[in-house]
Amino acid sequence: VECKDSSLALASWLQESKLHQIQPCVHLGVWRRPFYIKGTYTKSRRDVAQTPFFVSDSKSGGLVRKGCSSVEEEICPHLASCCGGISNQNNENVLVTPDGDAVVEEGSIVYGCCKFHASGREDIDVRMLLPPPSIVKSSPNNKNITGRPFVCEVFDAFRLPTAAQLEVAVKAINHSTSGDERKEKIVHDVNGWPQSLVGYDRFHGSNPNGVGVSSPLELTSSSSFSGLQAETEEKVKHYGCICWTNVVVRSDVELVEKLGCSSWDEEEKSNDCGNFPLEIKQDTPLRVLHRRSSDTRTRQIVSLSARRISDHWLQLRLATSAGTYVKEFCHGDCGRTKPSISSLLGGRVDITELDCQGIE
Image 1 (cartoon, rainbow, N blue to C red):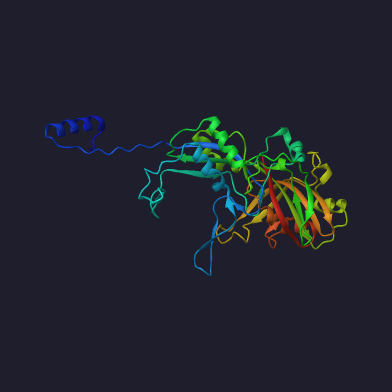
Image 2: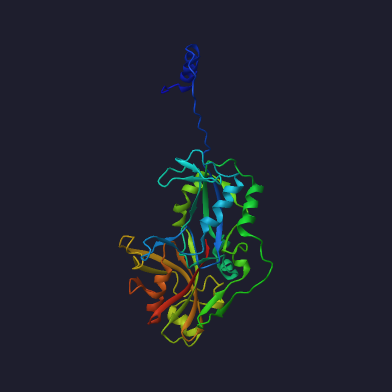
């Protein structure tokens, strides 16, 4: 019935149906408006993508999964569970299997779901960690440095979760928290390449797939969701990396002088940053040029500290403006990033390990 006052029209139609002894058939649709849950996450493994990651397989012609899991898959099912589940009754073309599972046909519209949105993303081989104490102490005005912020948009859930139910979801995502202590140090793999080992206080929980979330998770307004990407451009990102260079690095003093940065032991002194902040120019990296427009972007390296591991290995900690391609700042991207660690050292540089160590 199409009418401006649909309630009166429906009542009138039911009365007429009764008078003419017509059996009415009424279909009623009920749904819940979306609500939003916010938090921050960490990722302690280098084989976990932010969202499910598939690539084409030239041999089979199909798709092959990259990584053991994703941040989205580790978080969203537990949030859906704490909401009492999500209805599939308003989804298009729902089929029920003999086991009772609801399956939506390919190409159909899905209304009931839990959508994952994050403030930026890290590559699959990049860990998302909490900051080390030295970064927290050197942060101006004691600004809050956290894991990566995210918002989950929940459609058609059976209930609005309470704070206690959200805490149950946190425990399910994080698993049990390890009581062991482990100090940050450099270890070497079987090939002799240095790797950074971080303490258990640098990530949330002990999920075997490496994903953890902050506590408490909170219900939030739609404005937090809409402003998630806008706020990304205003944030400062903290990174740690290990690099190899063909230039012989004889001492920490020589390394710090060439880079014009602060030494590792003095990074807590925010007033001792050498030539930093440093403005750099970055052309669109070669590795993403196939999917992003060619452009030159101006970015800032807010701070940098460095230390020598051995003659050809060094460790860096840096803070950058949003949108900085850190891998390219290290190796130079064939001269497309200027200046770079490669150009400052005067030789070839390869980055072998990268961590995001907090978002400010």
